[in-house]
Length: 178
Figure 1: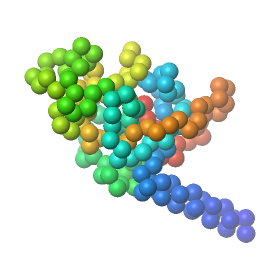
Figure 2: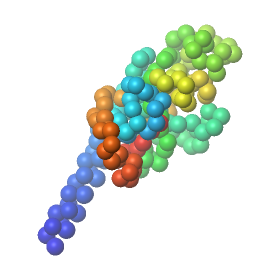
Figure 3: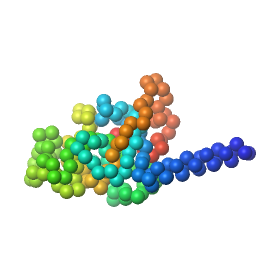
Figure 4: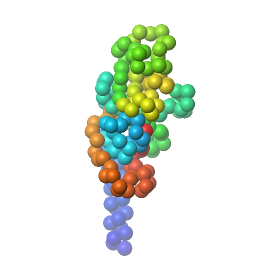
C-alpha cells in the first residue's frame, strides 16, 4: 500500500514538473523522421524554449500545416499548457528567412511568384536540412510566426542504435515532431 502511494505521488510530481516546465517556457519533444538529418535524427530529444524569437540559422518547432498550407484551428496561445501542445502536429525546421529579409526565391520554389521582395511581417521561411524529404516552405510558402512553438536550445539525447525507441514505449512526454 505504501509503495502504491509513493508511486502515485511520484507520478503526480512528474506530471507537475512537466506542467511547470511548460509554464516556464520549456518543452521537451522527440524528433520523428529524417527531414533535419544529419543535425537531428529520428528519436533525438530536444529542449525547446517557447517565446524565443526565431533567427536565421536557428532551428524551431512549428505547427505542421494541413495539406495546402492551411492550419485547422487557431494557434496555440503563448501560455497554453500541455494539453494544447499535445493536441497538435509539430515539425522541426531551420529558419531560412525572417521578416524583412529578402525572399529566398532561388531556394524556395513556392515563393518564386510572390510579389514582395522581402519576407512580410509575421512570416518565416522554414527549411529542413534534408531537402529531398522535408515538408517545409518549399511546399507551403511562408509559415506564420504565431505557429512557432519555440526555438530548439539543444539536443538532450540521441538514440542508441538497436535500443528500444521511445516510439515503442508510447508517446513522448510533450509531443513528437517531424
